[in-house]
Image 1 (spheres, rainbow, N blue to C red):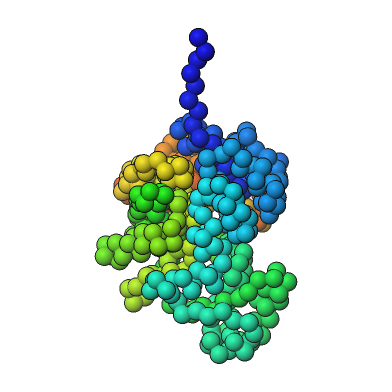
Image 2: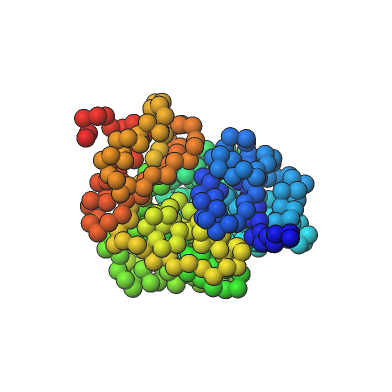
Length: 388
């Protein structure tokens, strides 16, 4: 008798970074096959996803070949050309999120225009094409490239016409535009992360505080300490509204400023699992990575509720010098803190590069902060044996 097999639908993932890598664990648990399009043979996600192909995400033929036979395609990054996504959708490939939604995370000018239509609270902003435009907008302000840019790249605080020379040179060389935004007097940065399925089911994670250093997320505290419950609810409702109005499928991270006068303003949007949601791997009932996969397959979403009162995520960043193998940090970190959760990305060390993160959870925030910070510093080579 021939055995009857029931194979789950395959999901194509474009991009081989750590976000794709971290989708692999819940995919394996759920029995969902992943097929990866990676930018190189040894990048983070190829190390854990056997069905991978190396190719250029900017090539439509490559995208078509990789997604053939897959139920849906989703993304590790937002850089796939919109026209290619539209071509895939026209050919019957379910892109989640779809091109009409994803463009709002790809193009800041498009995002700002749509948010204005939705009356979402935002910093004052304007597309600028010359230094005169920036002067008319008003110094000081923030200049951002409309496309590309991450971890502080493509963002400048400008206070004079001379400060505008570099942004316009970079924009011209890259073939992208610039947008000026009001320089906000903010208390801290927050992130409201939600997940939404094609059928419209949605779930909201606790609003978290993110700490940025030189434009790079250094640590996240879930939930945001001392956040007024009404403001937290407002942030979650804003994120849910945007997910619905933009027709997002999967994770939407809404990066926010909490202003000194008690408001929240939208800073950025990301339509994929996000650094500010990494705490959920160990601190939530259902991680952002599992819920993203559930959403793109239109499966019922899991609970976003926290498992402990506090979870702290601290990124492990490459330092200015080689620090040996990150793996060498395990004996110290694990012996010192048996409850610590470590996630390494299989990346080579480079200054400022995110090569992993640690999660610490518990009932005492100060304890969680100390444990997570100590472990991240140890892995990054910032501490010696005397720190024990």
